[in-house]
Image (cartoon, rainbow, N blue to C red; front, side):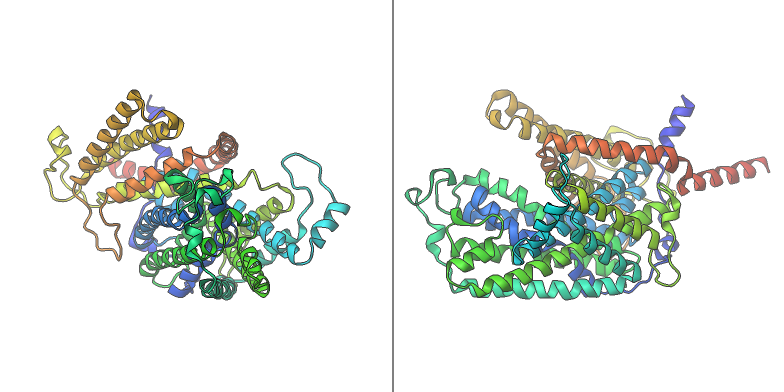
Length: 577
């Protein structure tokens, strides 16, 4: 029994957080607030404007796509606020991996980090293939036709042909990241600014061709399978379904949180740049989708290239080429944003020795983790080269949403944390609603941890009912269970809110804790449960591979374990003296 308890304690050992640890870094601090903001905008504002808007407007939301983007932005901002607090509190490379390591322990941190690796690798590969597809459309698919005829691949789940152009793009970006972070962000800044200028051109030109009538179509004017017309042709349900899809247009801002050891004044610049980038991205999504649905009836939109199509329809064929340039620049910036955090997560995990420590070596010349960058680039490049990414894209979503959920929960758990040795009162039920002290102590920490865990279970159960019993929500049993779980969630939130908080002075704190983080976590859980079963199966396979690495290497080599053993030896020696 004692051995089992020791194993469990080791699985949830935490990374210490001291001022010396936060300031120490082997990387170069060269990124400004502008660099970080453009990195967030570039990695986020891409396919959502050039592809996603047409598909969502035509098949899910109609003109109410503007509200879909608003709802998706609110969900993203809630997650962004949680990332912003941790960026201010823990300015270290590794993003959600480091945040969860400090608050909930090593095993959860490894799960998050391992999924971030998959998320960023698939994100890089999918954007690279989208880039080559866009480029091929400008040259009459010459590259695709050549590789299809000379090197066809006829294997299920693999691509129809090897995409060497995508592999080459990722190789080029990998070299840029290896040479230096400042050079790669300068490259990103140029392409992001071009993308913003092109979208601004689309919005301004589109204003002259907008017709309010396209938001007021009657059922008689619309083909049967495209809803009922008006502003919400598919109803509120369609608008919310569109929001779930539009949410993935905001994925990418979290790459800012991986720059904690390369940003100048990270405790201020990271929170500000996260919020700024999300606001900028939302405004562009909102106005682009408004122009799109007012220039053309929503049911006529092209799902693959909506912007060039609507401008061609009004006789502005020249705009098609301007938009094509913007799309290539946007996808290039998105590719930089996707691959940029990947080696940093690998580096952070390797530095903690939960994966092979050799990946944490930093070049004396370039001040970058060269081996981690090369391995990350090779993994992404091979994925883009041979795999069919259609079925893999959902894997990005599950990794991202899982990371968002844990960051939100970590904010709740860390808020009552205390580093001071206070007199810890014995637990009593009265402490649930009124603490005996005005400052956090070990008892209040445990109350928050247990209550937040119970709240998570209730949120999972509630979301499961909303997702899997969607057609029976008006049934008596469903209403009863929903009310019971909502009551339990409310009680848990009240208990957490009544506990004393850490009054440490940091540049940014999430307001209305625990309300905002818990709502953010619940929304993320709901979206995860909406993903198909096949995604969860692939997730299980990826995690199985990760657990082999962790339990075969990381569990015994972890720096946290070595630190605990050193502390144990020191205590034993003191007792013997």
